[in-house]
Amino acid sequence: MQVSVNRKDLKFLPDFSRVIARFLYTGDERALDIIRSVLNMSDKKTSTALKQVLRDFSMRHRNISKIFEKHFNNITHLFKQLNVDPESLVLIQKLLIGSYFTMEYSIEASAFFNPSMVEHPDQSETGAGEKRVIISFRATGEGHISSIVFRMGILDRDNNLSIRPVGKMLEEAEHIWRHKYDKKSFRSKLDEMKDFQGIFPSGLILDKLNDKFTYGELYRCIEEDRKTIKISALKETFFDQIMWLASSHYELDFSWDTNISERVIFPVSANETNGIEDARFVKFRDNSDDVIYYATYTAYDGHSILPKLLETRDFCHFKILPLHGEIAQNKGMALFPRKINGKYAMLCRLDGVNNYIAYSDQITIWREAKLLQQPKFPWEFIQIGNCGSPIETSEGWLILTHGVGPMREYVIGASLFDLDNP
Image (cartoon, rainbow, N blue to C red; front, side, top):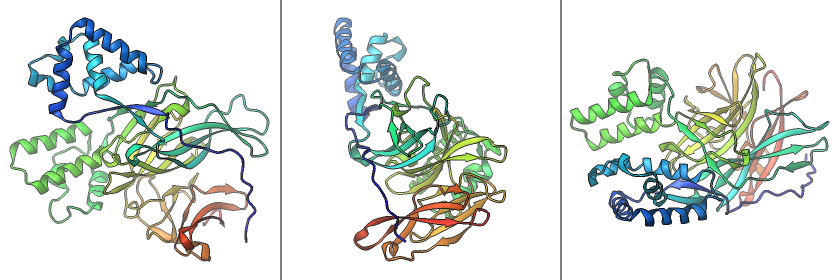
């Protein structure tokens, strides 16, 4: 059955002028030359040069001097080669040096797509029949690197969407690496990656750690091994993969004085270097009526993908975790907004063609799935997938699908599944 669809006039377009200030590093040799050049400047010339930079960029970035200082701190290890104590430098020297290791990056230069809408956690001061909403987008910038950005709007009783003005001073979050790893689940995920099965046992490093360990403890353990034994190239790669997996756990903190449209979740960990792709947000309500927002997304490093889970309650603080299990190896996972029969439920596509459903007692571990839906109509013969998390209605779970047909044309479909046994 065909459904009549009326397109709204509202359009979301990329804006290449939306930029973030990123750390720039082109190698030790060039970095040392830059540091020497600044240190050889007089105080007056240093001050004049810094004032010019601040005039040019302070209106484009919130607290640009803090960014310069952060980027200066990223390269303080180089000062040993110059026999200079970085703490002996005055602030204007630190800031000017930091500015040379900073660049603007246009986050929407290439594309702006893949929206996902959820109800805003704050519904105060909304009119009758209105809902305040948050829309996430995949923003793709220079080098085809994807990040997550947001817009806020109001949806009225007639489904008209009005978007609030978009801020221009974009900001990345503070990255926090304080996760406590569980040895059992970490070992399981490492074994699932299979690259080194039969060559190195996962216990090579993990057996030296406690049942709960931190990123720093893992790093120090690997560094000790590197110092005490001769490391082959293959073993070095194995160590890199352990740290690659460990870096997938982190937290993000945004400043409360930022507009939500100014918050950018940019790739942080080693497994995200080529982008954060296809976030599917959902407002999840547990049995105690507590609300948490989750988003499944795909981390991509240019070679491998890693399905991950993002968690937040306020869209200021986020936790990021990898998804584990035999079926957590592919793209397109979408979480149901509540448990079904006491279990978490997830839509997924294991074989690149069909829709599956999976259940789990733990939100980060997914072991088994069963076939839910196969291509049936000509417009979806190539493959079928979900358009996001299911929507609960009185008649059942409404699942929007995307089907791929002739000429690789994408078509949106809709299916209804039983509430208790989808």
